[in-house]
Length: 136
Image (tube, helix red, strand yellow):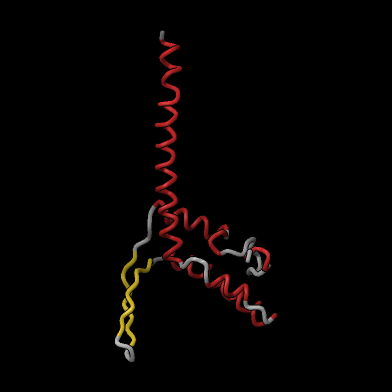
């Protein structure tokens, strides 16, 4: 199902997927260039004797991204409760977490840099025969 057609978004938000919000895009671009600090968070379940250990980013940018994500989640949940249609909320739950979005932004930047370098190398190889012909 295409989440864009669901029409659920917070007021003043131009998109349904929280990572495409202009505020989130600016923060994620900043995080891609200079990732925020973070740490491992340990949580335990006394009844099951299991531990949950996950990495979480901290700081202003991570908190701001969390607020944006929760804003979208609240709007999706409100829509679900008002219309008894939970598709938008289910779509929101499958969207990336803040940590996942920051990690993906860093990978996207790395790939973009690598692709630019690859493009320059390929162009140099492709143009080499023409440069040799001009020199002769």
